Image (cartoon, rainbow, N blue to C red; front, side, top):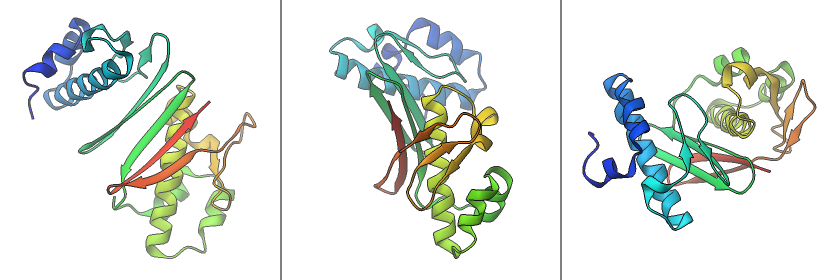
Length: 188
């Protein structure tokens, strides 16, 4: 859906220019997500959307002066995390079809794959999806990329903790379901 009316007014001039440099579908997705982010943050900060001190080039983690922000969008859903400390969020459709074994064996460490061997069908799909959103939230929390960090994280399907295998970090992501969505957040 093309951006209309008040949504254009929420964008900064720089965001409009950045969006114009993207392919048509990418520009619409970028402009919609940034306008929505600005509108929500404006309400929380008590200012006009265009005055939100946000720097958010395409393909980079959004930066908010005086706070932290994380954005996830998946098909027709958007999740925005906003905190005074680093935050990362991720969102996926709860019913998203995926080949759990193929994804786990390609991207997950062997210790985690071993935990998944006993899970049948849909329980495996949900466990892999839960691991994925938790890991992506942690990666955004660190302001890193999936390519650089996905294989470093191990999700413990017993206690719900994330372990960074190279740096020894241990996190307890918040994971939940709401309205057909599976979400995760890492704060701190």
